[in-house]
Image (cartoon, rainbow, N blue to C red; front, side):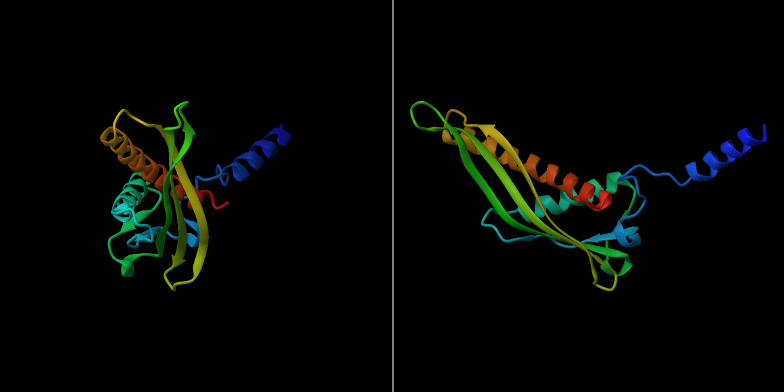
Length: 167
């Protein structure tokens, strides 16, 4: 009976500290209040920085493992993101030689800094989505815009996951 009690006590004591990977309650460096700096856009595609910052704020707000701070002075850490590449490229062609499928890709560099400005994480991430060419230039352009929004939303999720999983 004593052995069973000791085994149970062992599992209770060590089981309480177990966490699943990616289920930490703070970012690396113990950051619990995060300020998301304005996203810098080094591409010629307008407004990527506006949409990505909005998506990042929504993603971290919904996650609730950290609090998104409105002011850098109230934060334990700062997330800085730079959009370094945006491309829409044909990936397949019809028998007549016209593009029939495109890939929209966005590449970002991100830095997570603590309140003293020391870099805790430094990563490069990419997200992409493929889409079919539509009949007419206007329809293809609308498809590209819709896919661009989806790519940015996916990228904000990848950024969150990369920071919490810390791989």
